Image 1 (cartoon, one colour):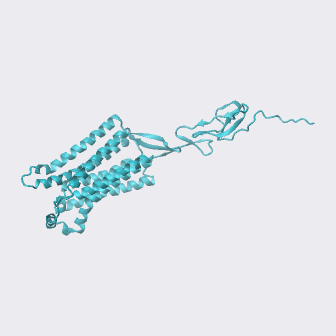
Image 2 (cartoon, rainbow, N blue to C red):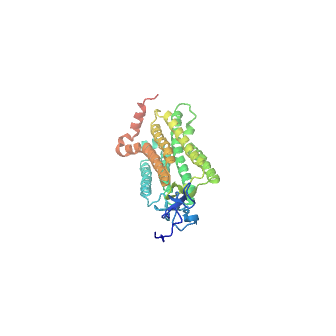
Image 3 (tube, one colour):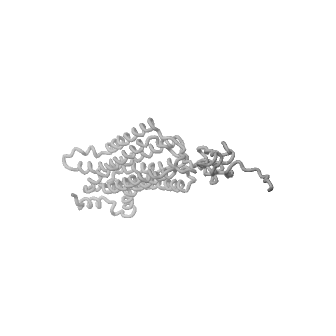
Length: 358
């Protein structure tokens, strides 16, 4: 019988292809292996470390890299943030800029018709101040778009909180003025001084100062900072702002909600006061929409990640700002432009005379 000249194999397993590693088989000889895929985030390119019987050890990719589909090489992760080049970012930016022009246009209209009864009757100075603030509220959305750098992360939430606190405080001051102005018309009332313009601005300053103090404490103790978030998606790095203290962030929103709820309560109680300057009904409806937007924002904010978190907050800012513009000023603009006969002292006085109360 002819003897075989073939050299016998010294292992019982073939070499594993790239992307797979060798793992020992239980109960088999020492050099018997099976080929299994590398763990998530690891590669096996046959050039890494080896041990007995040439069993390939998988190599972990760097934190900013991710394996290709074959798990043979590490590829750089895509860095993602809400940029102006992104379709979502550019759409929100254009919407923000156009929206900010609406309060400015209404302000020009109010200045032009400042001597008309409907403008004078609805607290002209506070209305103009509120319109300026609403433009800033729209524009603060731009701070959430673009590359998150340290200064932007520090200021964007504080700018948003203070701008909206000024707005809601102004609306609360208008609601309180409605009540005081009605009571002050009664004989012997000593509350006429509390219906003055200076009282409203002092009240707005105090409410805003409390929010400002909260923001200062936030920035001193746990300031926001930019970070690379690798937990959002395995193949992406989310470049975003870490809020530093989530407690401070929700306290800021909570204080804003308290002001809005107080505005709603005061306006709701004053909605039937028979005064020509009574805009309590508009304030009531605007606060209902405002609170609805931000209550809906909470679960949406908590369920999104990466750039969509910033986009969700921008959407809430724009929606709530538009709610205030539409509810507070659209009826007045409609009367000024399309129902001028309603913008007369005789019409307003007749409306008050026949308005039911109680």
